[in-house]
Length: 454
Image (cartoon, rainbow, N blue to C red; front, side):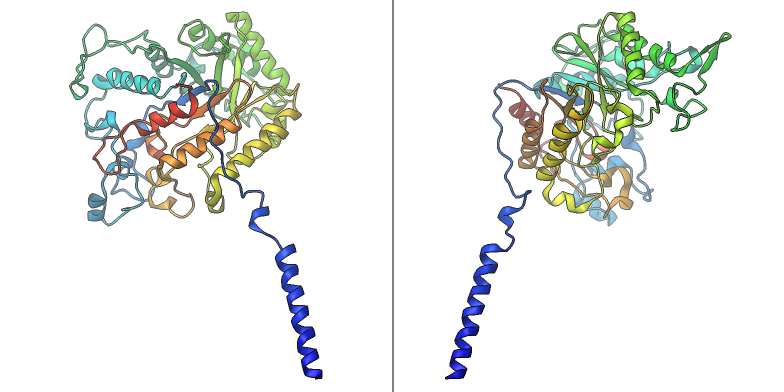
């Protein structure tokens, strides 16, 4: 009898303990990352900017693998890779449509005769994708030619070519691979452009800026016996950008009135005792030189860091917008298991907590998304294991597009990284269908569907 009572009591306790665990224990349903990304309907067009790269990095040799070029890792099919015993099943295995004749291969000879017709095709594709503007490679300054008043020649020529101001001088260019007649100039049609800004020459001018050598008190540069401060060099540089490009009808202006500039490099390294005064000085100089109030966008200095970390730089400087970088560009493998939700939470925190803490709360957040990420193309075998690979998948791209829509600011700006970043497989350019994993115009079509009403 005692044994029966003991057994009964133990059974009741065990049942109570089990019920308690089921009722009160942690559940996956309660985890803050356990939610679906909804499809956000497009009731009003988003303003879409697509990064455009020159693509010259694709012919480089990946680190640690002299037997391959990045072009081969991007384009060789599984059968061809297997013959070399490397990389098969990990590489993109696609052929960009505009490169199918081997334009980017090291032995392809002169590229110049195809540049304008190729870029024209790229512009047409971006229009088809519903993009409003293309963010061009950064323009730098040539401090050897003046106090911030001369833009780097190659950089500025590329922008003027995109704007249709310069071409090949009267000779029609062949486009047999596209079945079209040649063109002398790039025609942007409805497309706009935005200038990327590279101010490294001014930042790195000896002595280099640092926490103990701020822009207000470090030496500038002397021209013809006149010393120009770093602030004056910056003012002159931005004013020159404005005088060269802002009045062009094909230059993108936020709200139709404010020319956008995108500061890409060294965004966290302008050391200033008063960063607000530094940015205000740039704005005032551009206004006096061009009559325009510029819209300053800085690229987030780190991919996943909270923007509060940069409070003494562009945050207290009260730029108009902070753009995320491509969030796939990181080495924490655990994040990749729930990329959409983790990216959403990161952007939400920055948008709702960090940005409103500075100035009058008008600073805007701009999500930047990409269709894929494969650092193997850029860096070879040394990158395997420390950089998650995101393969191209239409459903994955649609999901990250919706994360971007959930976090867009008042101007509904979205950045796409990119049209042609071949060296990371982060591009939406069409690929040759029937070649490897080719997908045609899939990512152009998804981009338009996700961000435009029609």
